[in-house]
Length: 79
Image (cartoon, rainbow, N blue to C red; front, side, top):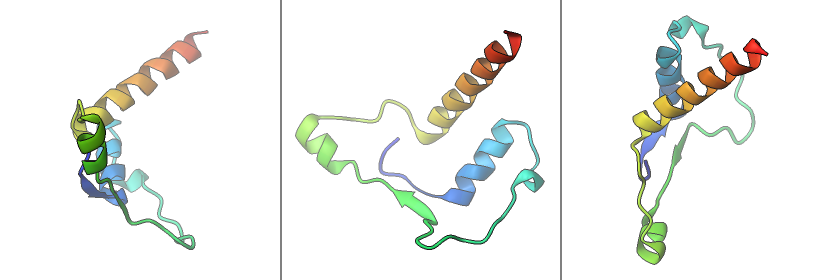
């Protein structure tokens, strides 16, 4: 969903859990110049000018994305 402020590490931890992995799977590397610690989306302009509204919340969107890629990986490996 829009208008969320979530740190990148928190997204990574959510994805790790959804994949049934341990947080030890996260490998930390040196930050690059201009490193983004979080992304904050402001959807007010979309809502006001186009009437747009997020259809799913962040957690549901992540779950759907993980499910899609798991299914796709299974299809590719079955070929």
